[in-house]
Amino acid sequence: MENRTEKFNVKNRVLMGITLFSMFFGAGNLIFPPFLGAQAGTHTWTAFFGFAASAVGLPVLGVVAVTLSGGLDRLASRVHPKFAFVYTVLLYLAIGPCLAIPRTASTSFSITVQPFVPKGIPLGTVQLMYSLAFFALAALVALHPERLTDFLGRWLSPILLMLIVSVFAGTLMKSPGGAAVPAEDYRIMAPVQGFLDGYQTMDTLAALNFGLIIAVNIRAKGITKEKAVMNETICAGWIAGIVLAAVYGALTFIGMQSGERFPETENGTEVLTAVAQFLFGKTGMVILAACFFIACFNTCVGLLSCCGKYFNSICPRISHRVWVWIFAAVSVLIANIGLNAILQFSIPVLNAIYPLAILLIVLAFLHRWLKHFQYVYPCAALFCGASSILTVLEQQGMFGEKISRLFHFIPGYAAGFGWLIPTMAGIALGMIINGFLHITARHG
Image (cartoon, rainbow, N blue to C red):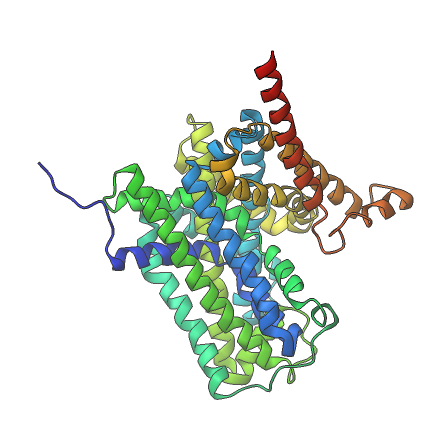
């Protein structure tokens, strides 16, 4: 009789956590924290507290919530099976081939290749060749989701972390300047603005999916019991969160130290470029290029693998391998000819479905107390989804001026939380309906 402990040692747990970190940490994660530091200035660490809550806390809780619920499909099915299917498909398309995957190539190209292209060479041709090679390599790695701990956790992520640490250490030894006066958005409610900055990373959406791939890697390492797989997946989520928080803190410090010397920077890329050149000269650009390439490549691999696994599960006639190549091919096209147009469509979709992701995570942790209130899920999702969609339509100018003014009377609307009060009303309505039905049944 085989006697095997269904539990990882410390080394494998850290490796799994680093793998999950690498899937989260893309180009956006690289550029948001330093820009926050540069803009928040002397209010940096109060702003960072809010940023960490939404950019670290929510994604980690997302991994835990989905794992405890038995997967995103089962969690979303508590609203309704049809809702679960439509929402999950929209989620995978939005964070996959319709936005996030193509953006990994276009963003990494702008930092990794474009600054080094000699004048006179057609940039469009170079970008096409780069994206073909980038997605081909990413697809080859994504074809083996069970080996991502070897590709991402064991090799690429440690290199990325060492590069970031080198810039952080350089900033400690040779400070570019110091913290600037906070920008207007950070002067009064710095933690709220920081929370909104982290909210924009959209990692909470990815968290609802990445647990699936981590579970595949855990099983590939010999863990077979479902309870043990769940425990190790949750452990990987917490380790990934700790690493994310540490890296975000280092990047935020780099941005804060650049504030006085480089006050004209307009985004995180410019902040990192200015600091890297200040610290290391031309070598700094090479370090920065390597950071962006590895971060974008890791995220691309994770997303290709997740999307391939999911669409293979709902359409098994097409293998995981074929789905990965389909998404890679579509991403090449979008990255080269239609990214701006797809951004105009996809970002509103992301903004519409993001509050629903937060709602599902919260309800997952409250399920022990809400499982007898089955109407809470559909009512809350209806109110949350409707308010989010209406907000997006208003932001796109779909309503007249008089109607648009009404939105600004909703508590929290100006801060980006106009969906919160309607969602709470939906939860209350669901509980009232269940209570009424319970009383009716007792006296019926």
